[in-house]
Image 1 (cartoon, rainbow, N blue to C red):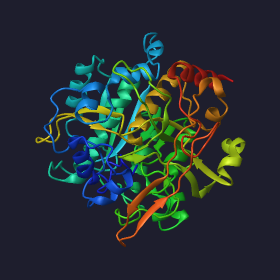
Image 2 (image 1 turned 90 degrees about the vertical axis):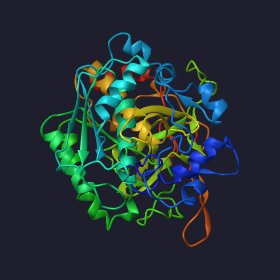
Image 3 (image 1 turned 30 degrees about the horizontal axis):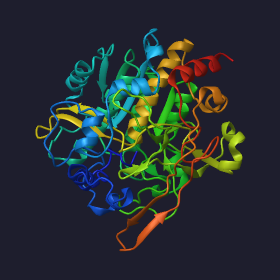
Length: 458
């Protein structure tokens, strides 16, 4: 998704340097806000938060260590296991076994197999049944560790694989690498569509996670988006669940030049597609053991904000009829939200960059999407069949299976565009029930997975 976790594009992560400086200096709160950081540096690589200009981490830090040294929370797998109440599922064998999570990324990572093994050994996780890498849309160019775009995508790939595995350690993983970088507009999507169709046609997976997206307004026309939906239609026919990260620039997003943000509310595709479940971002405040210190709020901090709003392309789908007072006549996003905040970074391990081997701290809705893929894999396992398009099932679950997010907003700004002017895009506030900042809210995974699996049988 082209946002903070838009690792996918040549843009975004250049703000990384600026943000990393803030982290390193400990001047966290300073008067620097997310939007200003996003526009403060030239976009030269994907936007991913790491410990940029300080020594590499040779160990995974605790939350206390991150707070003392960087001024921000960071989390290890066991903490999110506790926070989302995964243990009652995992301890009874509901861990995604028999299911396959498909992760789609441009370029991928040349070291993902060994990096996942190192990550698993460090955190006491089992190896997945299999991690298969395929390139059905054509061979990926040779990895260049000096290419910022490839580095960003490799980071994205690492986050996607490692954290999908945290949530569903028993699920197999298929990593689908595509040969063209997805940025804004149509670029990169024909290859992604071809690759996803290949996955569905060959029955290679049960849930597809997409941590990328492009602002709807950057496409030549709505028809150009409609022409790229075949993989989602194919997935729906074959009962494959498709997820999309909602974005990391709040109620706005990037223009075609990959530098300026729109000065009005916009939305991004594929998250805005009614055939895709849109996964937004929340901020968790946890202690070292993973206990919540306060209720989750909408992600909006120094690194970005959870994407959300209404589509300018797609009409309101039937499954959102009950929230028509919120979304109006158009598709609203997100549908559900999970951990994504930069004051709440998660830890990954990678070795693809010889100059940066070690543990790294990342954030964004690119985290939330693969995590939710793990949740879907567990629900598929418990149901004994694929859930397929989640649509109505999510909106029919009821309050017992959901945890409402009622605080925070996804207003974005102030930020400065290339015209030299400063803007703020007023976003949406969390509220009781469905809202355009957190969707239906978040959940306790034990209750949610069981309810979702039961709903499939209703």
